[in-house]
Length: 395
Length: 84
Image (tube, rainbow over all chains, first blue to last red; front, side):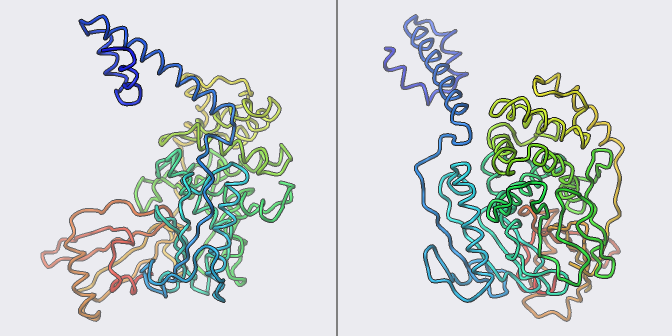
């Protein structure tokens, strides 16, 4: 075997097999070839890592794929492909839900493309498919792993779900997370999954409305979804979790989101426990994001949004928890911006109790440090609150 | 035959509405779909994020109860139209 033949091994033979060959083969030529291959592989990995770092948010984007959208009308059934009513560049119909779903999908695609050079949710040009008028009186919007589905709302508590661009950005971001960090949908990783969807959902709205001052921008998720008769402003508040609504008459009750680790909601990892409270505890990192944005002061999509994007797409993995996320955002702020920015991100996480005070921008991300620095969040999560489950007519 | 159905999930997961269906009053296709659904063993896999799932509970003739939980996508249209 020659070394030139061996180069073919680079992308095919797994590293563990190369190691075996390199140490156990009786043939000195094989051992030498394997050694060269492993050295080349190490160099390629180093170059790849360097490229990823230097290109910041641009990443190694594929050839730019054009925006592609399709909209289906479910005609109040559960058939998401019942009737296609619009495709990219087609004539807009009079149906407001179709127009809203089409427009918001386009805005979300443009947001990711223009700011992060991302080609659709999968970074490979996936066609954004939306299905509207799903079932009757359906109070929900869903990313089903392949496409968006929207209900019209019941008209009593909820408006149609295409009305809120941040909800559309939220759901499409579940797709981005699916193709990047792949955060598990339970407990703290699940709450982070919801958090990142809220972050980029709200940024799509702020960016499209040119809300450049974070202290005056909208931080309400699901703004406009509640009917005017309901005492509330939306589904969640990122600046003040727990205050989005309080309406006993309709059966909604009070917004149950906590805003600090001392109020972390511990629920079972089951469907009736919201998989460990993923929609509850996302309030905690949401506030951290809001406070970091206000402290930094620039349009949220320009600095803090980019920090969160790099963290989601390059630093987190399926089982990442709050403290891992906190330390990675601090690290990204330091690596891509400056120490002052990292200090502000750190202070935001300290303010919600995810990390303890004194974690500066130079904090090491060693395993030991993560364990030590997340002591506060673990302690808080060990003495949780259990909110009562409601069974109300608003649904 | 009465079947209790409870919904989970969605944007506001603390809301878990419950309905009771009298299967005898449903159409024949819904009755057949319900029998098929209740014949499922255990719990189905998790549905989409932010999606709904439904738990069907029934008291059996021998006094025991049976519970089946499935994602919304696994509920036939004939039954789904009766659920919140």
